[in-house]
Image (cartoon, rainbow, N blue to C red; front, side):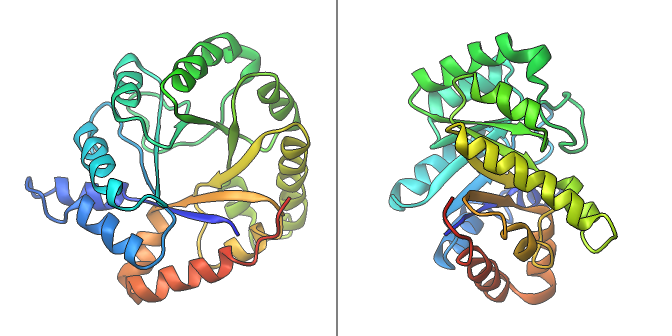
Length: 246
């Protein structure tokens, strides 16, 4: 079964718009966990426009009561970010190649340019006892390069898949993701996925076997507003339960 990690950035963004702890990121994490979510994700950016470093500390403390639920912290590996990982020690750290003021993640790492830098960062993450994942495009060359690093997982950046879903190119794009995922598994990498996945396109994406985790936030939050949290999480968990092992 694929694990569902709920990204709480949009809950944090809504909270920040009013300047007090409402809606509470921790309270919503606990609501999603009660509904069956397997993990919680945040992506604290340098401008703290949504999730913050304090959220990371608060969530780690709250999740101590839920030993089967993982905390995944995403971000670009600045010194401040890595110091946060060293201190909080989430279950997983996903490295994302975002610029400081970037609106949202829009590409994976290029190991041909950043392999040495990433290896230094990965070593530090592993020293902290944290599992590593690197954000990656569905590019077999990049997968091969990632497999030569000490990265333990990759997270396939799925905006390309989501954009093609329902179009004439859907099958060929899905085939690219399938090839990348299968290669990663053969080379010993775990495979996660995320970005613009939703209730409509996730069933198709999870025809790719062996996806360990999907991280979903923006669309999931909108779907919860439209249909209610319980119904939405129930549907996501049903979809995730169909994924076959690699």
